Length: 116
Image (cartoon, rainbow, N blue to C red; front, side):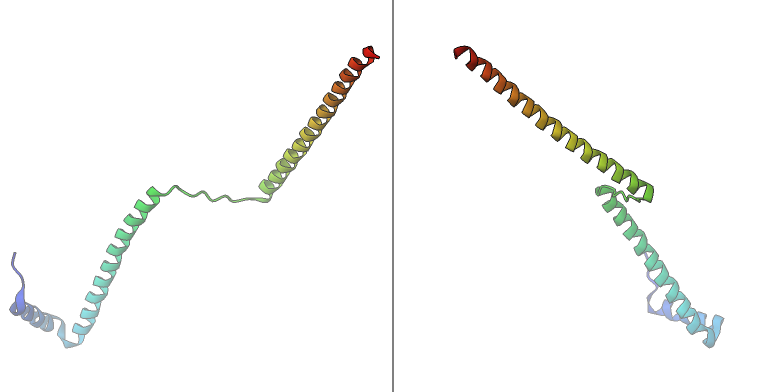
């Protein structure tokens, strides 16, 4: 593989000066620099995108919920129903315990009555 070297670089600069003239040469240099900068940023962006894709593949996707007023109302309604059901179950359990306690007391009372 051959390199341009200093003589080749001087030849290219002289040809550019002859073809474009001394007024256009600085503009041409800026355009080439700007193009190289954009190319560099684009390649950096591509490699960054690849890295982000790899990281996203490793992480579990995060779901974003959008809650509307209807959803919020439905959720409150369900929560209220759950609270009411839990309260009802708690009351039913208390009633069962009281009934069981009264039943035990009545059985105890029946056992004590024949002895007297």
